[in-house]
Amino acid sequence: MPTNQITMFSKYLNSTLWLICIAVILSSCGLNSTSTKHKNIEQWNLIPLKYATGFTIEKYQNKTRVTIKNPSDTSKIIKQVILVSTSDKSTLRDDEIAIPSQKIICSSSTQLAYFLELKAYQNIVGINSSRYLHNEEMNKLVTDKKIARIGKEGLFNKELIVGLEPDVIMVSPFKTGGYNAMKNLEINLVPMAAHKEMTPLAKAEWIKMVGLFVGKEKRANEIFNEIDKKYNELKKMASGTSEKPTIFSGKLIGDKWYVPGGNSFYAHYFKDAGASYIFKNNKTGAEPMDFEAVFETAQNADYWRVLTSSVVGFNKKMFLSEDRRYDDFKAFKENHILVCNIREIPFYEQNPVKPHVILADYIFHFHRELLPKDYQPTFWNVLE
Image (cartoon, helix red, strand yellow):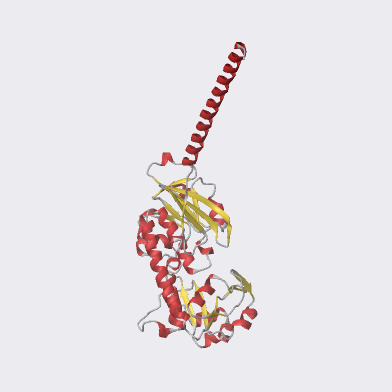
Protein backbone atom coordinates (compact mmCIF):
# COMPACT_ATOMS: atom_id res chain seq x y z
CA MET A 1 0.00 0.00 0.00
CA PRO A 2 1.40 3.42 -0.92
CA THR A 3 2.60 5.63 1.90
CA ASN A 4 -0.07 8.30 1.38
CA GLN A 5 -2.84 5.68 1.55
CA ILE A 6 -1.38 4.28 4.75
CA THR A 7 -1.32 7.76 6.28
CA MET A 8 -4.94 8.41 5.26
CA PHE A 9 -6.02 5.05 6.64
CA SER A 10 -4.25 5.77 9.96
CA LYS A 11 -6.01 9.13 10.23
CA TYR A 12 -9.37 7.47 9.44
CA LEU A 13 -8.73 4.76 12.04
CA ASN A 14 -7.76 7.28 14.71
CA SER A 15 -10.81 9.39 13.97
CA THR A 16 -13.06 6.34 14.20
CA LEU A 17 -11.52 5.30 17.48
CA TRP A 18 -12.02 8.78 18.87
CA LEU A 19 -15.66 8.79 17.81
CA ILE A 20 -16.21 5.40 19.44
CA CYS A 21 -14.58 6.61 22.65
CA ILE A 22 -16.70 9.77 22.70
CA ALA A 23 -19.84 7.73 22.05
CA VAL A 24 -18.97 5.37 24.89
CA ILE A 25 -18.33 8.30 27.25
CA LEU A 26 -21.56 10.04 26.27
CA SER A 27 -23.49 6.81 26.62
CA SER A 28 -21.97 6.23 30.01
CA CYS A 29 -22.90 9.74 31.11
CA GLY A 30 -26.42 9.20 29.88
CA LEU A 31 -26.77 5.96 31.81
CA ASN A 32 -25.41 7.58 34.93
CA SER A 33 -27.80 10.48 34.46
CA THR A 34 -30.74 8.11 34.02
CA SER A 35 -29.64 6.09 37.00
CA THR A 36 -29.41 9.21 39.16
CA LYS A 37 -32.80 10.32 37.93
CA HIS A 38 -34.37 7.01 38.91
CA LYS A 39 -32.71 7.22 42.31
CA ASN A 40 -34.44 10.57 42.86
CA ILE A 41 -37.89 9.23 41.99
CA GLU A 42 -39.95 8.96 45.18
CA GLN A 43 -40.87 5.33 45.79
CA TRP A 44 -44.11 5.52 47.77
CA ASN A 45 -45.04 2.48 49.85
CA LEU A 46 -48.77 1.81 50.21
CA ILE A 47 -49.93 1.23 53.80
CA PRO A 48 -52.79 -1.31 53.67
CA LEU A 49 -56.17 -0.43 55.16
CA LYS A 50 -58.65 -3.07 56.27
CA TYR A 51 -62.09 -1.58 55.51
CA ALA A 52 -62.01 2.09 54.50
CA THR A 53 -62.24 2.87 50.79
CA GLY A 54 -62.35 6.67 50.97
CA PHE A 55 -58.64 7.29 51.51
CA THR A 56 -55.22 5.72 51.02
CA ILE A 57 -51.95 6.21 52.90
CA GLU A 58 -48.51 6.00 51.28
CA LYS A 59 -45.10 6.53 52.87
CA TYR A 60 -41.77 7.85 51.59
CA GLN A 61 -38.98 8.82 54.00
CA ASN A 62 -40.42 11.56 56.27
CA LYS A 63 -43.42 12.12 54.00
CA THR A 64 -46.91 10.63 54.00
CA ARG A 65 -49.20 10.97 51.01
CA VAL A 66 -52.92 10.88 51.74
CA THR A 67 -55.28 10.45 48.80
CA ILE A 68 -58.92 11.16 49.59
CA LYS A 69 -61.62 9.60 47.43
CA ASN A 70 -65.37 9.33 47.30
CA PRO A 71 -66.17 6.02 49.07
CA SER A 72 -69.21 5.70 46.81
CA ASP A 73 -67.00 5.93 43.72
CA THR A 74 -63.33 5.29 44.50
CA SER A 75 -62.30 6.15 40.94
CA LYS A 76 -62.90 9.80 41.84
CA ILE A 77 -60.05 11.45 43.72
CA ILE A 78 -61.24 14.43 45.76
CA LYS A 79 -57.87 15.63 46.96
CA GLN A 80 -54.31 14.53 47.59
CA VAL A 81 -52.08 16.01 50.29
CA ILE A 82 -48.52 15.26 51.36
CA LEU A 83 -47.77 15.41 55.06
CA VAL A 84 -44.17 16.17 56.05
CA SER A 85 -42.70 15.62 59.48
CA THR A 86 -40.96 18.96 59.92
CA SER A 87 -41.06 22.11 62.03
CA ASP A 88 -39.62 24.23 59.21
CA LYS A 89 -42.58 25.25 57.06
CA SER A 90 -40.37 27.33 54.77
CA THR A 91 -39.10 24.12 53.13
CA LEU A 92 -42.59 22.89 52.16
CA ARG A 93 -43.94 22.77 48.63
CA ASP A 94 -47.44 24.04 47.82
CA ASP A 95 -48.99 20.57 48.15
CA GLU A 96 -47.28 19.76 51.46
CA ILE A 97 -48.50 20.19 55.04
CA ALA A 98 -46.27 20.13 58.11
CA ILE A 99 -47.20 17.60 60.78
CA PRO A 100 -48.15 17.36 63.50
CA SER A 101 -50.63 20.15 62.72
CA GLN A 102 -50.87 22.45 65.71
CA LYS A 103 -53.99 24.41 64.68
CA ILE A 104 -56.90 22.46 63.21
CA ILE A 105 -60.52 23.46 62.61
CA CYS A 106 -63.27 20.80 62.55
CA SER A 107 -66.36 21.84 60.62
CA SER A 108 -68.61 19.05 61.93
CA SER A 109 -69.15 17.01 65.10
CA THR A 110 -68.51 13.70 63.36
CA GLN A 111 -65.01 14.89 62.40
CA LEU A 112 -64.40 15.95 65.98
CA ALA A 113 -65.12 12.41 67.18
CA TYR A 114 -61.74 11.14 65.96
CA PHE A 115 -59.83 13.93 67.70
CA LEU A 116 -61.69 13.34 70.96
CA GLU A 117 -60.93 9.62 70.84
CA LEU A 118 -57.24 10.41 70.30
CA LYS A 119 -57.39 13.02 73.10
CA ALA A 120 -55.93 15.54 70.68
CA TYR A 121 -57.67 18.50 72.31
CA GLN A 122 -54.62 20.73 72.05
CA ASN A 123 -54.62 20.45 68.24
CA ILE A 124 -58.10 22.01 67.87
CA VAL A 125 -58.56 25.79 67.54
CA GLY A 126 -62.07 25.88 66.05
CA ILE A 127 -65.26 23.81 65.89
CA ASN A 128 -68.51 24.31 64.04
CA SER A 129 -70.76 24.60 67.08
CA SER A 130 -70.98 23.57 70.72
CA ARG A 131 -74.79 23.43 70.81
CA TYR A 132 -74.95 19.66 71.27
CA LEU A 133 -71.37 19.19 72.47
CA HIS A 134 -71.25 16.93 75.52
CA ASN A 135 -67.49 16.47 76.03
CA GLU A 136 -66.61 18.32 79.24
CA GLU A 137 -63.01 19.07 78.36
CA MET A 138 -63.92 20.49 74.96
CA ASN A 139 -66.72 22.57 76.47
CA LYS A 140 -64.29 24.03 78.99
CA LEU A 141 -61.84 24.94 76.22
CA VAL A 142 -64.68 26.67 74.37
CA THR A 143 -65.77 28.51 77.53
CA ASP A 144 -62.16 29.59 78.17
CA LYS A 145 -62.01 30.84 74.54
CA LYS A 146 -59.14 28.50 73.71
CA ILE A 147 -61.33 26.95 71.03
CA ALA A 148 -63.53 29.17 68.87
CA ARG A 149 -66.98 28.43 67.46
CA ILE A 150 -66.86 29.18 63.73
CA GLY A 151 -70.60 28.91 63.09
CA LYS A 152 -72.95 26.39 61.52
CA GLU A 153 -72.70 24.65 58.16
CA GLY A 154 -73.36 27.25 55.46
CA LEU A 155 -72.98 30.16 57.92
CA PHE A 156 -69.30 29.93 58.80
CA ASN A 157 -67.60 33.10 60.09
CA LYS A 158 -64.86 33.45 57.48
CA GLU A 159 -63.20 36.41 59.18
CA LEU A 160 -62.92 34.44 62.41
CA ILE A 161 -61.55 31.42 60.55
CA VAL A 162 -58.83 33.47 58.85
CA GLY A 163 -57.96 35.11 62.16
CA LEU A 164 -57.36 31.73 63.78
CA GLU A 165 -54.61 31.07 61.20
CA PRO A 166 -55.31 27.33 61.07
CA ASP A 167 -52.86 24.88 59.53
CA VAL A 168 -55.74 22.71 58.35
CA ILE A 169 -59.52 22.84 58.09
CA MET A 170 -61.37 19.53 58.04
CA VAL A 171 -64.34 19.91 55.70
CA SER A 172 -67.06 17.86 54.06
CA PRO A 173 -66.48 17.70 50.29
CA PHE A 174 -70.16 17.00 49.67
CA LYS A 175 -71.79 20.04 51.31
CA THR A 176 -71.81 23.38 49.52
CA GLY A 177 -71.82 25.25 52.80
CA GLY A 178 -68.60 23.54 53.90
CA TYR A 179 -66.03 22.90 51.22
CA ASN A 180 -67.24 25.47 48.70
CA ALA A 181 -67.64 28.18 51.31
CA MET A 182 -63.98 27.97 52.38
CA LYS A 183 -62.07 26.86 49.30
CA ASN A 184 -60.95 30.42 48.49
CA LEU A 185 -59.49 31.18 51.92
CA GLU A 186 -55.98 29.99 50.95
CA ILE A 187 -55.97 27.55 53.87
CA ASN A 188 -55.29 23.82 53.60
CA LEU A 189 -58.68 22.15 53.28
CA VAL A 190 -58.73 18.43 54.02
CA PRO A 191 -61.96 16.70 52.92
CA MET A 192 -63.37 14.16 55.37
CA ALA A 193 -65.59 11.66 53.56
CA ALA A 194 -65.92 9.13 56.40
CA HIS A 195 -69.70 9.52 56.53
CA LYS A 196 -69.90 8.11 52.99
CA GLU A 197 -68.39 4.78 54.03
CA MET A 198 -70.84 1.88 53.85
CA THR A 199 -69.83 -0.07 56.95
CA PRO A 200 -69.27 0.93 60.61
CA LEU A 201 -65.70 -0.36 60.69
CA ALA A 202 -64.81 1.47 57.48
CA LYS A 203 -65.98 4.72 59.05
CA ALA A 204 -64.04 3.98 62.24
CA GLU A 205 -60.84 3.38 60.28
CA TRP A 206 -60.66 7.07 59.38
CA ILE A 207 -59.12 7.56 62.80
CA LYS A 208 -55.88 6.42 61.12
CA MET A 209 -55.96 9.42 58.80
CA VAL A 210 -56.67 11.85 61.63
CA GLY A 211 -53.89 10.27 63.67
CA LEU A 212 -51.40 11.28 60.96
CA PHE A 213 -52.31 14.95 61.29
CA VAL A 214 -51.94 15.10 65.07
CA GLY A 215 -48.81 12.97 65.37
CA LYS A 216 -50.61 10.01 66.92
CA GLU A 217 -50.39 7.44 64.14
CA LYS A 218 -49.39 4.58 66.43
CA ARG A 219 -52.15 5.33 68.93
CA ALA A 220 -54.73 5.58 66.14
CA ASN A 221 -53.77 2.12 64.90
CA GLU A 222 -54.02 0.70 68.42
CA ILE A 223 -57.46 2.21 68.95
CA PHE A 224 -58.76 0.95 65.62
CA ASN A 225 -57.40 -2.56 66.15
CA GLU A 226 -59.23 -2.75 69.48
CA ILE A 227 -62.47 -1.50 67.88
CA ASP A 228 -62.12 -4.02 65.07
CA LYS A 229 -61.50 -6.89 67.49
CA LYS A 230 -64.47 -6.09 69.74
CA TYR A 231 -66.86 -5.43 66.85
CA ASN A 232 -66.10 -8.71 65.12
CA GLU A 233 -66.38 -10.68 68.35
CA LEU A 234 -69.88 -9.27 68.82
CA LYS A 235 -70.79 -9.80 65.17
CA LYS A 236 -69.72 -13.44 65.34
CA MET A 237 -71.76 -13.91 68.51
CA ALA A 238 -74.90 -12.48 66.89
CA SER A 239 -74.44 -14.41 63.65
CA GLY A 240 -75.21 -17.67 65.44
CA THR A 241 -78.75 -16.68 66.39
CA SER A 242 -81.59 -18.46 64.62
CA GLU A 243 -84.21 -15.75 65.13
CA LYS A 244 -83.77 -12.50 63.21
CA PRO A 245 -86.16 -9.79 64.47
CA THR A 246 -87.22 -7.26 61.84
CA ILE A 247 -86.49 -3.55 62.13
CA PHE A 248 -87.09 -0.28 60.28
CA SER A 249 -85.69 3.21 60.80
CA GLY A 250 -86.54 6.91 60.79
CA LYS A 251 -89.69 9.00 61.05
CA LEU A 252 -91.60 11.64 59.13
CA ILE A 253 -89.77 14.88 58.39
CA GLY A 254 -92.39 17.20 57.05
CA ASP A 255 -94.47 15.03 54.76
CA LYS A 256 -91.65 12.64 53.81
CA TRP A 257 -90.01 9.66 55.50
CA TYR A 258 -86.36 9.27 54.48
CA VAL A 259 -85.87 5.52 54.42
CA PRO A 260 -82.33 4.10 54.41
CA GLY A 261 -81.65 1.66 51.58
CA GLY A 262 -81.31 -2.08 52.03
CA ASN A 263 -77.55 -1.87 51.50
CA SER A 264 -77.07 1.27 53.59
CA PHE A 265 -74.75 1.90 56.48
CA TYR A 266 -77.61 1.30 58.94
CA ALA A 267 -78.67 -1.94 57.27
CA HIS A 268 -75.15 -3.31 57.85
CA TYR A 269 -75.45 -2.55 61.56
CA PHE A 270 -78.80 -4.36 61.83
CA LYS A 271 -77.49 -7.41 59.98
CA ASP A 272 -74.34 -7.59 62.11
CA ALA A 273 -76.52 -7.40 65.25
CA GLY A 274 -78.57 -10.41 64.19
CA ALA A 275 -81.64 -8.55 62.88
CA SER A 276 -83.31 -8.25 59.49
CA TYR A 277 -83.83 -4.81 57.95
CA ILE A 278 -87.36 -4.68 56.57
CA PHE A 279 -86.59 -2.75 53.36
CA LYS A 280 -84.97 -5.17 50.92
CA ASN A 281 -83.20 -3.42 48.06
CA ASN A 282 -79.66 -2.62 46.94
CA LYS A 283 -79.83 1.11 47.60
CA THR A 284 -77.19 2.70 49.81
CA GLY A 285 -78.73 6.13 50.32
CA ALA A 286 -81.98 7.30 51.85
CA GLU A 287 -85.11 7.47 49.72
CA PRO A 288 -88.01 9.85 50.48
CA MET A 289 -91.26 7.93 50.87
CA ASP A 290 -94.84 8.73 51.85
CA PHE A 291 -96.16 7.53 55.21
CA GLU A 292 -98.46 5.03 53.51
CA ALA A 293 -95.62 3.39 51.60
CA VAL A 294 -93.54 3.00 54.77
CA PHE A 295 -96.50 1.69 56.75
CA GLU A 296 -97.33 -0.91 54.13
CA THR A 297 -93.87 -2.47 54.50
CA ALA A 298 -93.02 -1.80 58.14
CA GLN A 299 -96.32 -2.01 60.03
CA ASN A 300 -95.53 -5.46 61.47
CA ALA A 301 -91.79 -4.99 62.02
CA ASP A 302 -90.56 -5.97 65.48
CA TYR A 303 -88.37 -2.90 66.15
CA TRP A 304 -88.25 0.75 65.17
CA ARG A 305 -85.08 2.88 65.33
CA VAL A 306 -85.41 6.67 65.82
CA LEU A 307 -82.61 9.25 66.03
CA THR A 308 -83.96 12.56 67.31
CA SER A 309 -82.95 15.98 68.62
CA SER A 310 -86.05 16.42 70.74
CA VAL A 311 -86.40 18.12 74.12
CA VAL A 312 -84.83 16.41 77.11
CA GLY A 313 -87.21 13.80 78.46
CA PHE A 314 -88.65 12.91 75.07
CA ASN A 315 -91.15 10.04 75.46
CA LYS A 316 -93.80 7.99 73.63
CA LYS A 317 -96.55 10.49 74.31
CA MET A 318 -94.46 13.30 72.78
CA PHE A 319 -93.55 11.07 69.85
CA LEU A 320 -97.18 10.22 69.20
CA SER A 321 -98.08 13.93 69.24
CA GLU A 322 -95.91 14.33 66.12
CA ASP A 323 -98.20 12.00 64.19
CA ARG A 324 -101.15 10.02 65.61
CA ARG A 325 -100.63 7.27 63.04
CA TYR A 326 -97.40 6.13 64.71
CA ASP A 327 -99.36 3.99 67.17
CA ASP A 328 -100.54 1.80 64.29
CA PHE A 329 -97.09 0.23 64.04
CA LYS A 330 -96.55 -3.04 65.87
CA ALA A 331 -93.21 -1.78 67.26
CA PHE A 332 -94.97 1.18 68.87
CA LYS A 333 -97.66 -1.00 70.45
CA GLU A 334 -95.09 -3.46 71.84
CA ASN A 335 -92.72 -0.78 73.18
CA HIS A 336 -89.94 -1.70 70.82
CA ILE A 337 -88.92 1.79 69.71
CA LEU A 338 -85.16 2.27 70.07
CA VAL A 339 -84.36 5.96 70.46
CA CYS A 340 -81.23 8.08 70.71
CA ASN A 341 -81.80 11.74 71.59
CA ILE A 342 -78.71 13.78 70.66
CA ARG A 343 -79.67 16.47 73.18
CA GLU A 344 -79.03 13.94 75.94
CA ILE A 345 -76.51 11.54 74.39
CA PRO A 346 -73.20 12.42 72.64
CA PHE A 347 -74.08 10.43 69.54
CA TYR A 348 -72.44 12.55 66.85
CA GLU A 349 -69.23 13.18 68.75
CA GLN A 350 -68.76 9.47 69.55
CA ASN A 351 -70.53 7.20 67.07
CA PRO A 352 -67.80 7.16 64.35
CA VAL A 353 -65.35 5.61 66.80
CA LYS A 354 -67.80 3.54 68.88
CA PRO A 355 -69.26 1.04 66.38
CA HIS A 356 -68.61 -1.84 68.77
CA VAL A 357 -70.62 -0.05 71.49
CA ILE A 358 -73.50 0.71 69.13
CA LEU A 359 -73.49 -2.90 67.92
CA ALA A 360 -73.61 -4.12 71.52
CA ASP A 361 -76.61 -1.85 72.16
CA TYR A 362 -78.50 -3.36 69.23
CA ILE A 363 -77.61 -6.89 70.29
CA PHE A 364 -78.83 -6.10 73.80
CA HIS A 365 -82.29 -5.28 72.41
CA PHE A 366 -82.47 -7.99 69.73
CA HIS A 367 -80.76 -10.85 71.63
CA ARG A 368 -80.44 -9.86 75.25
CA GLU A 369 -79.33 -13.34 76.29
CA LEU A 370 -76.01 -12.88 74.44
CA LEU A 371 -74.74 -10.09 76.67
CA PRO A 372 -73.96 -9.94 80.39
CA LYS A 373 -77.02 -9.42 82.61
CA ASP A 374 -75.64 -6.12 83.91
CA TYR A 375 -75.11 -4.62 80.43
CA GLN A 376 -76.52 -1.10 80.10
CA PRO A 377 -77.02 0.46 76.63
CA THR A 378 -74.99 3.57 75.88
CA PHE A 379 -76.68 5.08 72.82
CA TRP A 380 -79.89 3.19 72.06
CA ASN A 381 -82.60 2.84 74.69
CA VAL A 382 -86.30 1.90 74.62
CA LEU A 383 -88.60 4.90 74.27
CA GLU A 384 -90.74 4.97 77.41
